[in-house]
Length: 188
Image 1 (cartoon, rainbow, N blue to C red):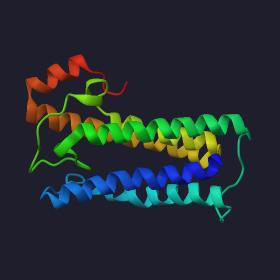
Image 2: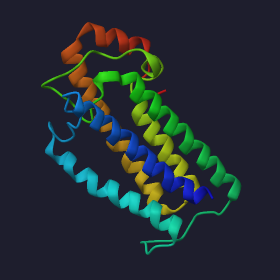
Image 3: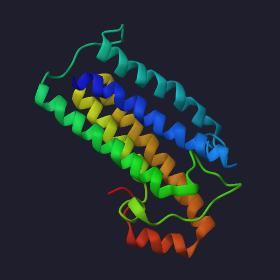
């Protein structure tokens, strides 16, 4: 059962982000700004889709690169489900807290207001924390070396993107953003 929840997590995660982007587009806001500043970001989607395939392959017994797991524990898998659920709830709270300011990537042309309320009063980057929680949960459900490598790579990519966003936010919002940084941690 935890294996199926891991696939449901992928579907719900993508569904939430894409639905929010679609809702924004209907209001005249282009929320998908991924790769607008750095074209190398377009290398990320193929790796993300491969990750999604790995999760589905592990759950449904499809062909995959490796089926070897570090351990097999139903209890640990259920802990993984809890991490996935926590990540999904945090992602949902983040999307609601963002309001009309939600963007995938940096929107230098049409930045919205600085969001410091809701979940953003606890973490400056709750969406990345949510994604990391989901990755950890899925690794606990499917404890193989490929997903472990993905956790390391994703951590590096998330942090890289956060630093880019922080640089933009500091330039755009100035002292308001710096005061916010002094009050709220980057991640947790």
